[in-house]
Image (tube, rainbow, N blue to C red; front, top):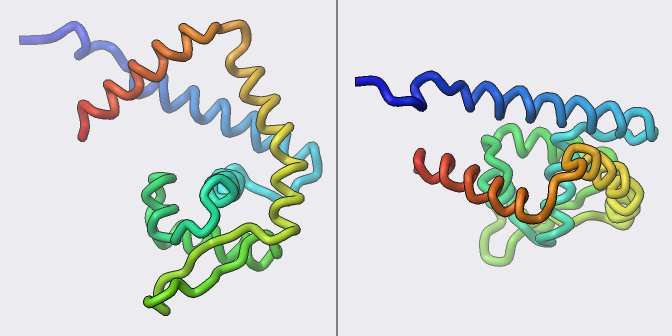
Length: 144
């Protein structure tokens, strides 16, 4: 028996929308002169909001595999934006913090990110956002 959702390609719609947003954000970051990829921004944003987050926690928060997070953090560290500090009681675990340079980058890049968010949201209202979150959470939870 078929269900009406069998023919709704919502995954494709979500995926293409995400790609469109990522491309627009990367273009804006490049045009603004930031040496930063979207993935580097995502990790920087999480580290800023949760100073001391571990690499494993960061991988879980961003839904990226640990080797990818390690590679991105290595690049951010090499650029001087992030520093690793050994976790108390476990020298194999590192806590991540933005450096002064990383915080400066964040403060300068955030308006670019905010502008893309505003552009994407357009004239949608707060109730639209609430419905959007409810729907996305429902789809997410259906796979949990």
